Image 1 (cartoon, rainbow, N blue to C red):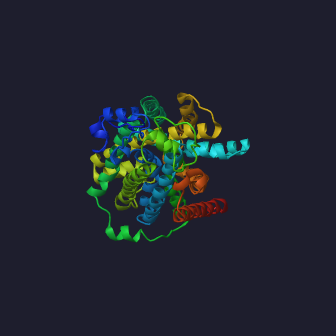
Image 2: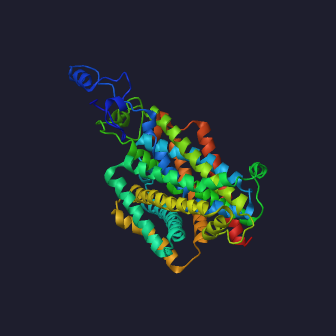
Image 3: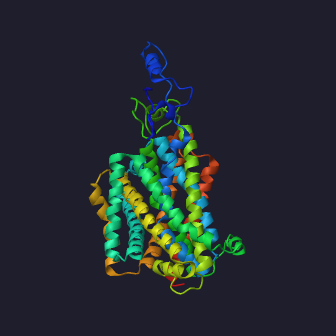
Length: 464
């Protein structure tokens, strides 16, 4: 085997994992054994085998909170907020790429990097607290969505549906911890396909109005409630826990098979110890990451748009469509039981997949910022209990979902600003630090999101 070859979950046959010019194992071992000989050429996988982390992180963009926000926006305002979905997805591409780049180049997650740079113990704990609240809001949306889906499909009581959703997500996390990144990716991507089909089919059965679609691309609001829904959509689209998770997913997926002695893992000059340990150029990984993020965001953006368009074209003005149960009933009445069932199946897959990724992000937040690891079951219960309490007290599930997305929107700056700042530093990413244009785009996205949240706060506190 090549000295530094690493397969990133690929088949370990040389025919499948190497370039045609790569030396055979025997030749590589022979060259390595010669005194003074150059190290053997590393095995370089095909780009297709490097795709995966963004697809897993992209599930966060298709969680039940997205469904509730986009459904409510389409049913109440028609095509008005199409531009919010599109703009959110464009910003999400940049943000997720920066997160993945941080994990690839440094071999560390964003919480780990921040945990090292936040020297004040109490400052680090305060930052962890807001990130933990974001993780709880995320889990609230995802567990409630899974519970509602089980209720729609099988009549399972919401509290039991929440327990089932949480338990299945724990099984998926066990797969990730024991079997590694690649099997976990396959499971999540399979659920992603179910989500895409379940939420998109209705648009092809009952197409939206093209004129209304194009009119919805013009940025505008109708009233204070439309601003609230816009913040909810953005909170569901650009999710703080997805920023934390993506850097960790890339770190785990492309972890070096060995780390040569010497060098600082946080600095990346010509002799990059992480690159040597991987046996693959970091530039190639970043090119694959751009493809990975592009595919994931194309899928997520298209499905989110389909959800809003489905509601705008078929549920506008229909009573009760401001809830997931009402939307399901309205779809059943207008488009038939098949479309309604596919919608419920997509919602269930969304809850199961996204709550697993959310719990993974929560564990990484705690480890990176507090430098402690908590047993998987205990960690899962920390964020699951609030969701079960909400279900047990009988709060309206859809309102809880929408409000949870607003909470997430307030957590965005705390994840986004540090991400843009650290990826712009050559002391952290070396020659892979952001170009000035990339940093400017990240700053612009941060300013826009913070401004929208400030307006939302003003509307809430003034009662407007």
